[in-house]
Length: 403
Image (cartoon, rainbow, N blue to C red; front, side):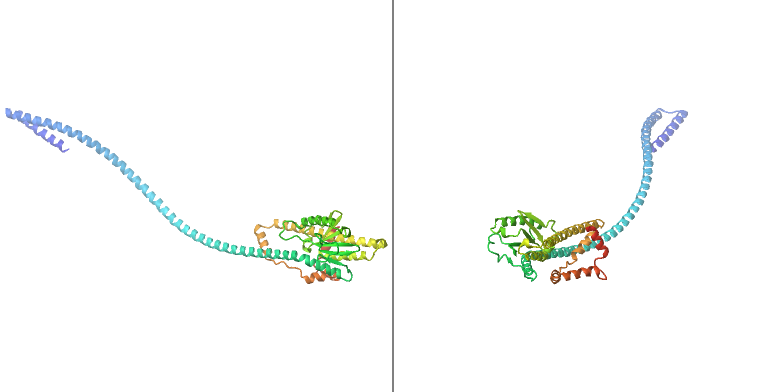
């Protein structure tokens, strides 16, 4: 810009000198000076043109820079707006982070409390489970010991009680145990107990499978009946043996049998409880009153047959009632449990495991087994007392179900 102004000023001066020279007349030296000045002016014009081009370039760049500056200014304003928005968003995010941290801290605290509570509950459950399992083990051990005791003592106790029955004055039968058998009984065939009945021997064998046995009592008795029939047939005294053999099993096990009578090789086998021995021997005693069967009065013979039939029916019916009653009881329990929640079932099982199972007192059993009057009195107390255990409606329903 300054170069342009200098050029203009120089041109004006030279022009003025040229005009002034023409008016006054110019000498040769002056003309040379003027030519030199013209050359200078020409050079200045070239310089001015060059400078003008540079100026145009500079102006173009300036315009470009001004445009870019405006764009940058606009972008800067936009960025400032975006920055403000980002700061506001950042502020909101920070507030959310603070809120989240607070919520997280509260949740962690609650979670810690729940974990502590769950840990205590788990410890309590584990302790309770251990206690229940221990009680269950103790119950099973006690039950196993009781079954072991029954199995170990069953033969001895049964023989002892049968000896007592045979010694009663109203029965008074000659008897033998497996350590004192009649002549001819030896080798592999050694019954537990024999009763001399007319010209025959009635076998009473105490039978009960071992608690740890995988065979059920039912299968055990079937197998034993076959083995005993074979031993009787192969013995040298088969003609002297009465063709009805009694298997004496524990009273608690009779109800579990679905079949109480077996027939093998012409011999009848009956599973009975020790309580049935006395009425059976009582019936046999009536028969022994007559040494000659043909001398028996027809009516008396009919009476004896009726007595045997009644005993057989009673024992069979009682066993059937026990089986049906047990089956109905299981069905009622199953139906009842279907309507209960899992939690309630678990509580019931836990409570059941805590209940102690009472055993019958031997003195009460002996009193009731040994006296008909005691049994009748016990029945009367259940039915006729002010608060009877068995109501008239219950008896009526039972009678209707039997009929």
